[in-house]
Image 1 (cartoon, rainbow, N blue to C red):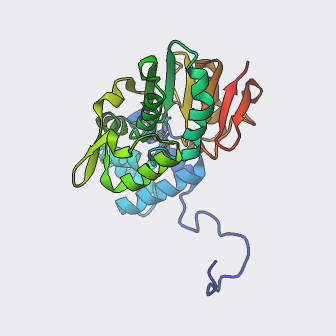
Image 2 (image 1 turned 120 degrees about the horizontal axis):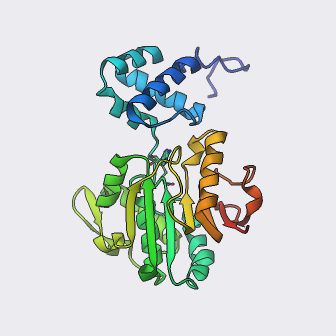
Length: 289
Ligand SMILES: C[S@@+](CC[C@H](N)C(=O)[O-])C[C@H]1O[C@@H](n2cnc3c(N)ncnc32)[C@H](O)[C@@H]1O
């Protein structure tokens, strides 16, 4: 509340009164999205979904969630826009630089002892996290021994990830993150720039396989030494988080590492006892049984 705000303190208004979608209408809309796209948002956290659906209602000028639902049923072309609005793709290179510093200092020395290393980045969005890890592993001399499997539910972001083209305007932030993450060379060594965008060096992708994988419905597809799933499960409700953690547990070798986002944890899930924390702040866990 600002100094001049005259609103008296008290309980917040009901969500519907504050312009938030009604839960029943939201569920009906998500049923139709699932039927039409195969994408199931019904296990995602309501708080974020409601905000995004409210945004979609405004953008479509639909007036209400049921209005948006009617529009969608009448015009299937609206589906792609709606799915885009419902999904959060925010990412950055060397996001939370401390995470990559800990990776370099505590995980790389162990990976060095392995003849071959498989890493899964689940929910890789437009690929910034993938290129960050590829750069780090290259600098640590592990390039020849590593394969990174980078997956996301969205084909659109995967296409961008494959291209490795990012806006020039983001490079100052990415370069600062890279330095804070323990980067070893001038950051521009890794890309060529034009007036609006930068293209990351092709060879960074040599060790990467991009593909679709849906954490809601798909199964384990390999056994990994490291799994990163950062800032993805924060959008899931408890049940779906449990599913994803089951999948990660089944897909990690014993003593493999699980890296999560800053507000995510494996503690308080059914798999908690199977992991030891490697770094509490950076949310890195090691599977111990
Ligand atoms: C906020 S981004 C996180 C990107 C990156 N991991 C990071 O931390 O910067 C979340 C990504 O998760 C993906 N995602 C959402 N639901 C998913 C699902 N069911 N299966 C796989 N990926 C999903 C989204 O498409 C999006 O690209």
